[in-house]
Length: 197
Image 1 (cartoon, helix red, strand yellow):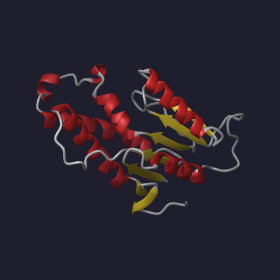
Image 2: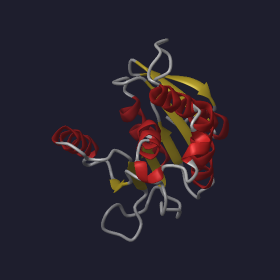
Image 3: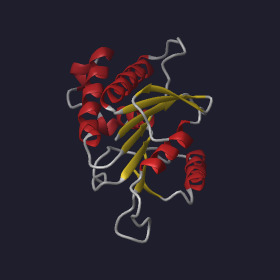
């Protein structure tokens, strides 16, 4: 099963996503001591400051005892487990920023992509290609993302390109996942599909 979960900052989407992952995890498999862990948490946040480190440690503490093995993936989402595990990817909004704003990932022909629309289209298509195999992996996958485009404000061209790409990727995931939920003030609101919890 594939699940997309979104919500604003502090909405409770992370805690809800963990509950969904735990409810979907294969039972009867060893957690950390065996060769297979049924719950994998893919953390996309890079640690670039003491504040980042404190946030990551807080999240590790909140997940303690829940059976997750954490994979830190602040770059491209590659070499992910594909053996039937339930995998929670947190979060797509951070992942999009990681790729778009890392100079090492700049498109080869940057001059041809000077206009913001072309730049956003390049990243939208690049991310769709990256996510496509993850959508079809063996096992359950939960994608967590943020809702950032509803404030009505206008930002710098770079930020507007990011918002455009993230909105397109969120829509792509909603279209291609079995279920989608928006968490509002801790309350999950179903967009499509059914969840076991």
